[in-house]
Length: 116
Image 1 (tube, helix red, strand yellow):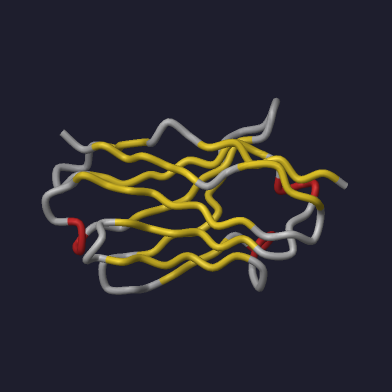
Image 2 (cartoon, rainbow, N blue to C red):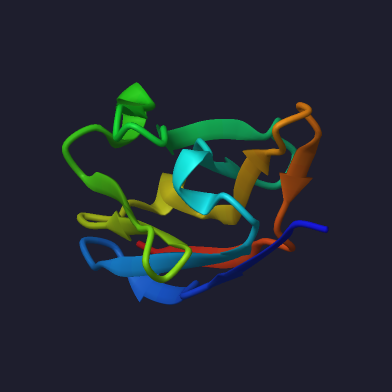
C-alpha cells in the first residue's frame, strides 16, 4: 500500500516562501514520477510541478521561476520549494504518484494560504 504524507503548508505573506515535503512509502521510490497538484476553492485541481525517476522536471507556466521541485531518494521524499508566493498560490497542495500498474495515489493535502 502506497502512502503519501504532505507537510510544510501554512500561512505566509505575499513574497514569502514555503517548502512542502511529501514523504512516500513505496517500494521502488526512485523509479516513480511524483507530481505536486493544487486545488483552490471552486477550482479544478491543477498540476503544479512534476519530477520523473530520471530527474526530468516540468512546471506549470504560472509557477516557473518561483517554484522548484526536487527529490531525495535516500529519504523517499519529494519537495516543493515555493518562493515569491502570491495570493493566487493559495490552495490545498497534493502529492501524487502512480504505482507500476498505473493506480493513482494521493496524499491528504496541505493548505497553503498567502495573504496579500
